[in-house]
Amino acid sequence: MSARAKVAASSRSGALSPGALSPGALSWGERLDIIDALALALEGAYAHLTLKRALYGFDVLRALADLRRQVPALSDLGFHRALTELVSRLRDAHTQYQGPWRKPGAVVSLPFLVEAFGPAAAPEYVVSKVDRVFVRDRRFTPGVVIEHWNGIPFDRAVERHAERETGGRPDARRARALESLTFRSLADAPPPDEEWVVVGYRDLDGRRRQVRLEWDELAPERAPAAGPGARAGGRGRMRRAIDPAAEAVRRAKKLRFNRTLWQAERAPAARRRTKAGALARFADFLTARTVATRHGRFGYLRIWSFDLDDDAAFLEAAIALLRRLPDRGLIIDLRGNPGGLIWAAERMLQLFTPRPVAPTKFALRATPLTLAMARAAQNQSELGPWAESLERAQQTGEAYSMHLPITPPEQCNDLGQHYGGPIVVVVDANTYSSGDLFAAGIADNRIGTIVTVGDATGAGGANVWEAEDLAAALRAAGQPLPDLPAGASFRMALRRAVRSNDAEGTLIEDAGIGGQPYDMTRDDIFEGNRDLIEHCAGILAAEPGTGLSVRRRGAVATVETRGLDRLDVYVDGRPFTSVTLRRDGRRSVRLPARAGGVEVVGFGGGVVRQRRRVGNPSNAA
Image (cartoon, rainbow, N blue to C red; front, side, top):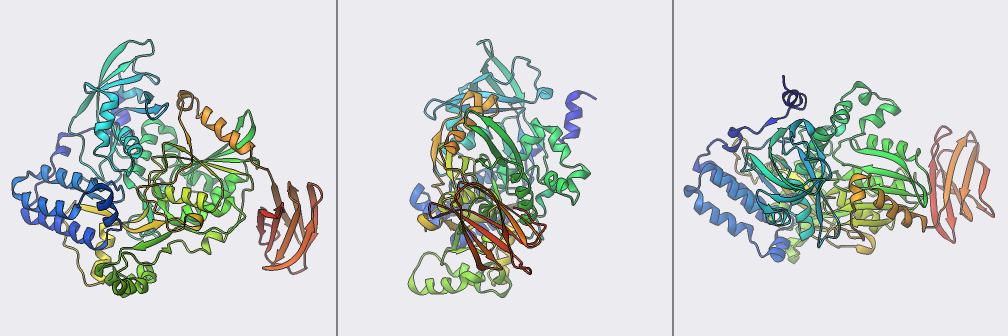
């Protein structure tokens, strides 16, 4: 067996088959059922319908009606491509048509990755990773500069591809186009028209060369800790904000370029119910290390994805990682995070702040269809809280229901602070959905500083539902969705998100979360984000540093402080004592003999800087 064949077998990868380009034929009636189902869902429940019309001058309902008239003249593949492109014009990765080529989790890929650095107005495109088993040209290595794509100047090729991409801003569309030139999910779009591409590049010696590379199909699978998620029975099935196609691509990159880690996550140790097993279980979602910089040593936490089902175990793993990091400051890298379980993203915020966290709020469009759904008895657990305001909206003409949180505020504040240093969060235009929500929570709750590669996050401001979830909710409301033929489906933004606190009511969709701009460098790509980390370390070093740790043994709490001038101690939710601090160091606080939960609040300059909770003598914070 050849090396290529061995890798294909181990990764369930293979050349793109011609049959994948020719899905089975549908009858005219089946095509019309697809159009009618989409029209009903978009007109009656799509969260951003009026926004998209206003921003892009595109009426998706009129376009569907026009496509309905064209059905007899279109080939089967032409119909699916036309419908895919039509829905994509909404610029909403949450809302996508999925044709009969659909293979959830499957990704087609070229055997290399291209990235950009430098200013957005004049980026340079370089190959950052190569799957050497699949590339015979030994001069095509990381570091070579991409100049042409099938004979088209590469920058123009990116622009042309961006015209068909989702994303509310030009930088977001370009970022997604750059990624999809080499990795494309088969969940949302047909396979590429071409079976190979010809890449023109300048090698490390400055010579211009060409290489022909073929598409392969990868099946990266979801991480073992991902849980049921969007599948039937998932605890958070309808509480997700995610671009599933981007998550599949993220997993495919890991399979293609880091097979050792991809295989390690399936080892028995990664599933053990121990502290080490919990960390291994979530290694696909969380990694952490200490970074040494010119400004000192800081923590670096990478949150790769929120596509999981057990938010409690995920947060336990995050807390365990945070305890290993220096408390002088933390860089949270959220770049490329495609989202996932809303609870996981919003509950995580409390780990980094002593102040109460206000979650993002969501609303339904006020239509007779959403009101019927919210009134239905079987939909009460998901949509019941919005029913009353939807009824009022029918009387007053309001376009949306009241905005209410999906993550209960008490759950956003039930664990308390576990990291006391200043925070910098790094995002990019591929930070999407629950990644947007996390960044919004950082900004709106004044938890830390946001650094953006590009103009802002990807701007996915909604809770997304799969077609089968919507169909079930509509059946319960007596408003059945037309049956979709086998293999055809869609997903849709059902509840739109708005920000909280100082940004109360501000939309996330098509705007995203901005911050301090940063341009990637060549050293960032090839030297482990060296310049980016130094930039963030400079921000952290300029922040005032305080620290607090609390350990309890019996009726004595041992408290260690740095940079604080007062401690308030609460026992079982009631004020117990207040201590004025004149110096940093360690001190003991004697507690009542039968004390239960203890909370210690640290002040600096009259402002709450730190907060820790210990529930019993074995807990430590």
